[in-house]
Image (cartoon, rainbow, N blue to C red):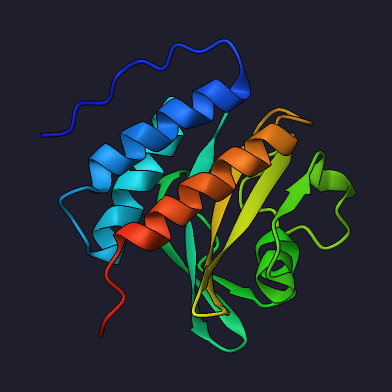
Length: 165
């Protein structure tokens, strides 16, 4: 059985290295992508400081993301590709880091308490199939170290899940 341990670190890279170790342990005996997304959302929500939402949106059609497992307040269910931070990350196929969501011209306010956001696209076989979205009530909460760390976590999720249908 997985037991989450307190993350003691001195730098963000060390924090994310330990969080990657914990995620690998958490996903080591499960390959179901939904179960893994649910557990990963819980791990991120409880381990990362100053986070008020952590979860997934999955590509439902070529033009729409649909809410997947998450932790936090109820969220927007459907997001068009190209809209908001999540839809922009999916459209670009690249991570989007927003210091102040109020300054992001097309931000979709699912939680009025969110001030900054980091969205990492989930890419498999050369195509985006979803995004990992993390919100914070603190403006400027995320930086390049967070982006690199969350991208590494997303890679673990993708590699550890069985995508056969």
